[in-house]
Length: 461
Image (tube, rainbow, N blue to C red; front, side, top):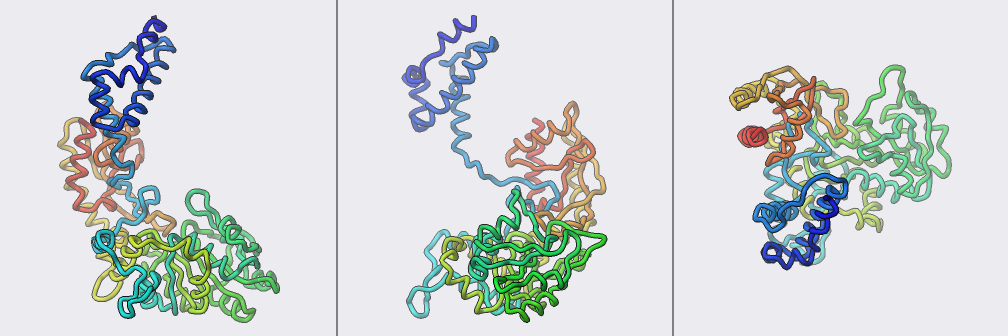
C-alpha cells in the first residue's frame, strides 16, 4: 500500500505548475517554495516508507494554507523579543542587559541619519570614534584614558597583544577563569600570542609566587576578578596594591580583567563587587570590563588606564578589527550619561533597577498578576518565596530574595507548560522549580505585565 502511495507523490516541478503551486510562487520566491515543498515531500516519503501515514490532499486549500504558514514563519525574524520571567537579570542566553530608553533612542538616531562617528566637526577633518565615550569613561572611572572595542574578550586579547607581544604573562592558577561557551582565559592568552606562566595553586597564590616567576621576558601581570565563581575556605591571594607595587618595581604592566564592569558600589545588596574606579585607585595600569553586564549597556569591551598604554592599544592594527560599531557606541555613551548627576543610575539603568528592586515591591506586582492568572480556565497560580540571580557572570554568591508565581495547568506537566509558553507570542521564558513553572517578575517590568498575561492565555488556548 505504501509503495502505491509513493508512486502518487508528484515531482516538485509538477506540483509547482499546479494552481496551488503557482499561487504560492506568486506570493513568495520560487526558491523558497521549492525548499519548503521538498522538505514536506521528504517528510511524507519518510512516513510512507516506514509503513505509516497517508497521502495528504496536496491540491487542497488546507494543504496550501499549511505551506503558506510555514513560508510566512520562515520569513519572520529568528531573532525576536522574549519575556524574561526567569528572575535572572543579566541572562546571557537572552541577550544580557536590556537597554535604557535613552540608549535605545540614541541608537535609533544614529541609525536613522548620518553621524559624526569619525568626523571632527570643529576642524572639518577626519576624527576618531574613540573620542565619543572616552571622556565619559575618564570621568566615571578616574582613569587617564579609555578605549572601547566590541567585547571584553577582545579587550583582553588586544591589551595582551599590544603590551605583551610574544613575551610572558604571569597569571595565578586560581584565576584561570572560564566564561560562557567554554571560552577560557588560557585560550584568550594563547590567541594574543603571549606565553602564559602559571603561579600558585588553585586556592592559594601569594605575592611571592608572582615575584619568583618574573623574568626578563615578563611583560604583564594579569589578575582576573572571579566574577562568576568564588573560591572559599583555605585561600590566599595578593591584594591589588601588592601586585601594583611589584609591577612598578619590576617595570611590567599590571592588567586587571574585572569582567562584570561595576561602576557603582553594590554594598546595599551585601555584594563585595569591586568597582572600576577602585581598581584604578588601587594601582592597576590597565582595567578591562564588559559593557553589557553590571554596567547595563550594550555589548562592548572597555579598556581604561594609563594614557601611554591606551595609546599603544589604539595604534595596534588589531584595534581596527575589534572596534565597536556606531550603534553600540551610541547606546554605550547614552548609558554612561545615566551615571552622571543628576541622574540616579539605580533608577534609570534597567539592570541596576532590577537588581535593587525590593522583595516587597516585587510581591505587590506578583500578587496582582497571580490573581489575574488564576482566573484563567484550568490554571492555578500561587505565590511563593524564591530567589533571583544577577546572572551573566556577576555576583555569583548573591541570592536576591523575591516572590515568584507558581503555575500549574490542569492535565499538563511543567515541561509541557514551559514549552507552550516558549511557543507563545511573544515567547515567555520561565524556570521550572519543584515540578512547577515559575514566573519571577524581577525581570518583567510593569509595562510587560499585560503582555505576559495575554501570552499565558494564548499558550493555554
